[in-house]
Image (cartoon, rainbow, N blue to C red; front, side, top):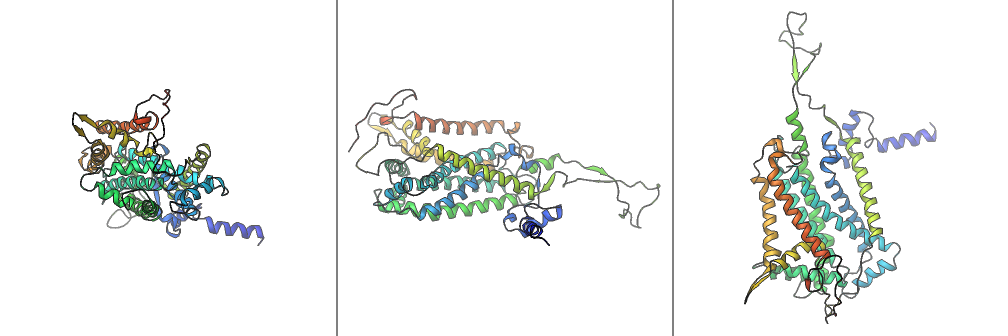
Length: 441
């Protein structure tokens, strides 16, 4: 045997599970390949459609894995102390070879993960995919709740990482965020004290945010994601599969000559008419490998390339070192909490000597109500099984409109807080210039 043939045979032996030569090999690949145990033997053709799920769940996981790999490398270069944190980040930006790319990729993927997980939740709601279909033992409302928990953990993961550069942007963003959290009734001050390890943002706060960011929260996200994927399998796959089941019809099939259709043996002759009908459940299914796995590789590659391009185009900011004595004007929360900061401003009202606490209403009560509504809604939704797995089902028009209106308001408030709020949180149109403000010491 030549060297080329030996190499070809070895390559085939190592990669046959990703490129099976037959349906039997495709089935064996799911059993014998550890990574492919995530997937069922066969998947619905429609569930592979790009325009149904947009593979937002896959993109979210790819972004999380990029964050894990880049974060592990950054841990070797970052020093979590108030004296050296800013210097280590500055060295990453200007001294370490390609350190700026590593840090920027970690930052951009964190922002993208927040946005993509949010869009994934929007997709699930608009397709009614949180409702049970025909699968036995399905519990999609529970998986929806797990998804809501994943969104909250993603926000916390990004929030805890925001402080680590220890520059002015990070310091005052965390100041605003923790001040909003402190407005929670009864437990607000306790939550802020727990996050900061005291009453000030200092070494205790930095080390707590660091430990939460690099260990506890990633472990929680990984656990919830594994549970989420396991529930998808237990629920029968994506919700569009339930819609396909409703469209299946029995079809006439020719009897197999070697099969016994009578109690006495094989029916022969023309005196007895034999007819068989069945539902072909395999007609719309194809092997997971290589059909699904190939798409996942494409999504992984495109997500990585897009993240690198965005990292190069939008360089990670690094302001001056954190200084509690110098207050920027305005001080803003991280962008994914700016809608809360905007609502806090809009709900802070004064009537003579009486003031309505906007931080309590806009920062705690309103988002708390939204989370409770998200958890309760799958059990309140009484739409029929025909609306499961269907984009903008007519039966769900009203609740889709309400949901989209809430999402639109969140996006609008985020845009206003990002681009239209200037000194003293005054409103400015994008084409208006901000007045020069003296720095407060």
